[in-house]
Length: 383
Ligand SMILES: [Zn+2]
Ligand SMILES: [Zn+2]
Figure 1: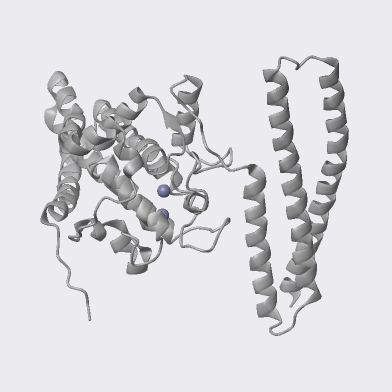
Figure 2: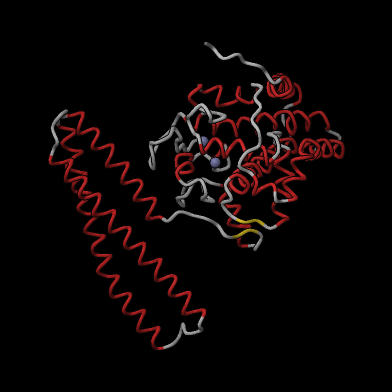
């Protein structure tokens, strides 16, 4: 039996109303008055600030506790984030934690299982009584509680900044059309794209146990949130685009704030763990393709591939562990003020010598993996 839908009138009117308004007013304004630099600047500034407050604040800080932030940063993210008109940080985090916990199931509030548009925005329009859950940690923060009680008012004050700018520059209508109407639509849909497009289009380099995808094209539109496969695998990591060349403006901003001493205790997965997850997926895919090419036959190539991957995995893990242990030891020596002692120099030389063997093992394991992979790939091409 089809489930009876009830619509949340306020949400439905707000989401569709702002979209229609922007779709009518923006072309009209462009045709009649063109676009002024000040309008473009305010639009980009507001969109970027509010989107970043959602990504860096609502998402990575409050929903995932990926780092710790001083109160001025929390206050700013809460105030600016409210202007996204995506509910309070507390409610947003509550829904989002359920999304991660029950991803792709009926309990996922924006499951992609019900289609692109449901995950994108009709879930917001449906009347659902999803209670606050699993956010007791956030409720301890008086700033979060204050924003939860007043988010609409706070959001309105911030969202109306273009009005004040318009009044000061004698261009109220232009600033409201671009800086308010179009900006609200842009903010909404950039967030929504993560729940829809980033669960449908893109690659799955780290895990295929859920629908989340890495999509580089979405990253600039979502302040770095496009690497959603990575994010679902390590949701507590302060980065979404974890590799240095991946576009993640939120990560770069957070790094800057850390440099200024305003945030800290960043949580991040090791490069070794990322590589190991990638290798596992790569091996799995190649084995699947091999099985398809010669069904029923347990090919010696599959065994070779698996063995090479396990060897490389072990080498990566042990090298990483040694680095960790050494890092701890180094910190202990420093704490004791012995970082320059003779004994320290000896220990360091010993460690470096032992590392040479580990590095050589790793190099060999990489070579074996690459050779096995090449053999599989060429056999698949010629099969
Ligand atoms: Zn997701
Ligand atoms: Zn998340």
